[in-house]
Image (tube, rainbow, N blue to C red; front, side):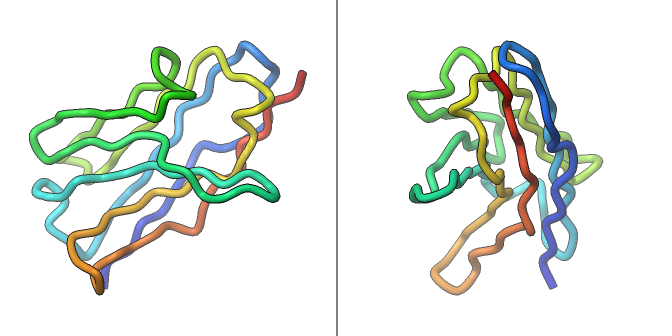
Length: 116
């Protein structure tokens, strides 16, 4: 079955950087769009960034210019490089892939905390 496992969360000061990784298994990784979402306490889950199978990227307005999504198909891994972090970036970050209403997979999430 499809599994997504995130790594790389932690505590960082404002202005700092973190890189999240998500390793996929049980799927043909190279043909799937991969997404990063986040959910802060008391807020709805929001889409942070996406990358298609051919490497086209898109970002939420709040992270444009600061975050970069990338992928390594040989390692079945998608990355989220987060720079110039702000306290409002504090959230649980989730890796996701979806290709139908029943094929919608999520990782367990990784906590990112940005201190001011």
